[in-house]
Length: 214
Image (cartoon, rainbow, N blue to C red; front, side, top):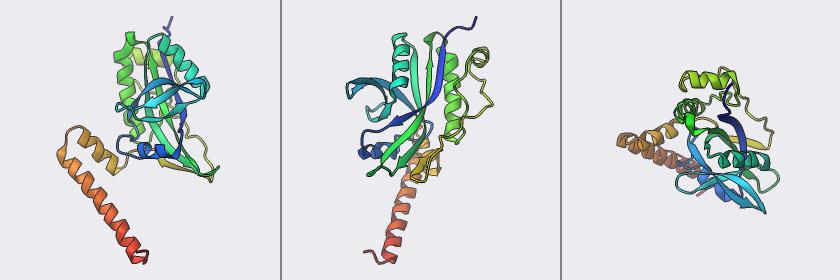
C-alpha cells in the first residue's frame, strides 16, 4: 500500500497592503524561488504565510489551505512554497497584489526523492511551465521509484483573470537570469544585470525628457 507521504497543490496568496509590492517585484522574489511557510495570526485566525529566508513576507494563504498545512506541520512534514506568478488587480481601488505558489509537502523519510522532484519543478516554473503537482497514488509511486526524477506530463492551467488584472511575473526574464547567476557567485553576471538596469532607467528618463515632462 502506498504510504501517505506527499501533498502538492497550487495555492493563491494575498497581500496585506500595496506596500508588499516592494518585496514581490524585487530581486529576492523571482519565479521559481522557494520560500518557507510560517504560521501566524490574521484577524483572529491562524494562517499560513509565505516568507523568504530574510524574514520578508510575500503574503498569506486562504483559511482552508492554512488549516491543511497546519495539520501537515503537526506531522513534522517538510513544507515549501515555490513562487508561480505575481499579479496586480486594480479593482476595488486602490488595488492589490496577489499571486500563486506551488506547495510541496512531504514526509521527511522520503525527503531526498521529493527534494529532487521539487527542484526539477522549480526549473519548469522558472520557464513558465506549470506541471501538475496535485498528484496521488501512481504519480507519487513514480516519484519514489525514480528517486525524484519523474515529472508529470500534464500541465496546470493559469487562473482565469479579467480586464482588471495584470500578470506581472509568470516566468524568469533576462534580468532574473542574471540575478540567479549572481546568486551563484558569477560576478560578471551581477555587473551585467546592474548595467542593464541602469541602462533601462536611463532610457526611461530620456523618453520622459523627450516628451517634455521635465
